[in-house]
Amino acid sequence: MFRRSSSCCLIAGSLFLLSSLATAATPAATTATAPAEIKIGTLYASSGPFAAISMPVNLGLKLWVEQENAKGGVMVKPYGKRIPIKLIAYDDQSNTATATTLYNQLITQDKVDLLVADSGSVLTSMAVPLAKEHKMLLFDTTGTGGTFFTPDNPYIVLMSDPVSTVWPKYVADFLTHEGPKLGIKRVALLYATNDFTTTQANAVRTMIKDSHAPLDIVYDKGVPTNTSNYTVLINSMQAEKPDAVVQMGYPDNDVAFLRNLHDSGSSFKWLFDIYPGLETDHMLKTAGVDAMKYVYTYTTSSEMEYKAESGMSLPEFRKAWNQAYPSGKVAFGFNSVAGYTTGLIIQNALAATDSMDQMDLRKAVFSLSGKLKTLDGTFELDKNGAQIGEITPLGQLVPDGKGSLKFTIVYPPELATGKPVYPAPANN
Image (cartoon, rainbow, N blue to C red; front, top):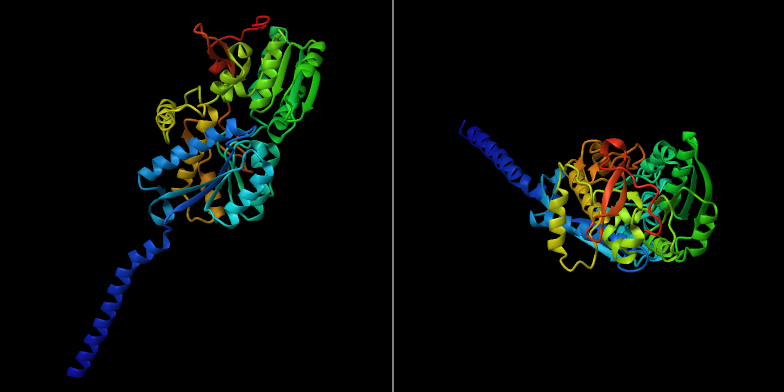
């Protein structure tokens, strides 16, 4: 009896000890499985034609990283804890070949957990096939080219602005619905031939034609993205006597076009340009107030305040931006908001994901669609990962009486803050 009792006690004691060791090991094992950091890889352009849109995105993303790391890192659901973020960022200098090399380095050598594209469709286009090839989910900040989003590519999601096929909706709607009432009958279309602006130009053309409005497109021309002199093109458009002109390019295109038009001493009765609304401060410094008077443009979330349910409000973000970057070397604008918004979407996705597997991350991002509201508006995706929320109203830049310009939202009617000035005063 004594031996049997001792044996039982020994067995029970052994089981208790093993159980205790297993229990004690569980937290350590969980901690061991959590990475020391979450590596986010991205590119930026400190120079070249895309610097004006890339640097604000990069600094907006960095501001989000710094804020989250000040809290101990970003909350990651699979590990039930905050984990510090390591941002790995390389300078592609606006060069597509360099961007290709650096995207590949982030994926294959740095082995980042999340891949964030550089700003704009041109530099994003290098990342799209690489991300698909390596089965990495591409967090596409502002690359809106419609060709990026296809049923056979689940490895891309657009973060911070609408896909180019829907972005110009209010431009086309204004021309087709309000244009004829104003006397607009003849439309000229000029665009830079890249994924970003070609897709938008195609959308405007299609929307005008499909509307059956009494509008004729009397001038329709694509030019290289590196076009720096528009004088001959402006003269050719003027010969067609358009009532409205839609000019679509990157910042350098818009600056050159507006300067050339102003220097010619002439003007168009109705003129749309993209970047006076997206990077207003930059455009005021480079194109000038007089060249931008009465121009129609997108009214973005850097000017129009949305109710943010995640992250900072627009006034809070602008204050934080000015505190973080007091030199003002990089102008505050829409791309600043876009970089920060990308961080917020990543933050919410990590808090919802079942694992760090790329397809689980994609599932988590899609779970936010139609629900997440930031200072950039409502985040919403179509089935291919294209952004269909965050659509910007059409605004017009008018003199503010203080030597600068202010936005008047002219379309859609439910958001309008004033009526359009048409025709624009000659020579501004």
